[in-house]
Length: 120
Image (cartoon, rainbow, N blue to C red; front, top):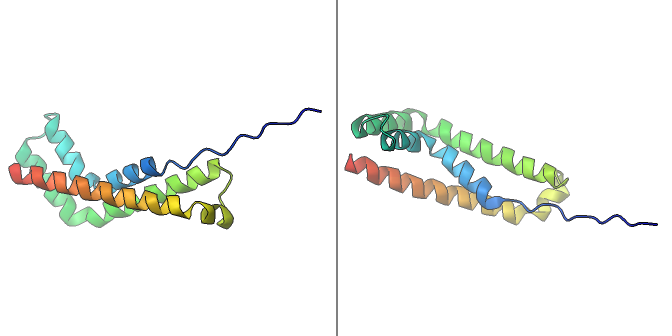
């Protein structure tokens, strides 16, 4: 009789999940900066657009970041066949780490875009 080798479940990519969630959360400011860097907008127009987006829609972008992060965590857990309470409890530290990475990504990108906005 042959025994089937069981492969371990893939690891949770908490760093990538956090970076993507943080990037979606600050996309209101990063988007105009990228457009200015590639030459699609002037620096003043990018700063004005970022100010308008951040002032009126910041919480929508932050909510989208949280939603994207949650969806990526669910996707990663489903890949591991651990999308139940026991599976979540087993990786709750990694989920918390993904949240911390998202917050740090958001903070760093916020600081960089604010600094670039002051230069414009």
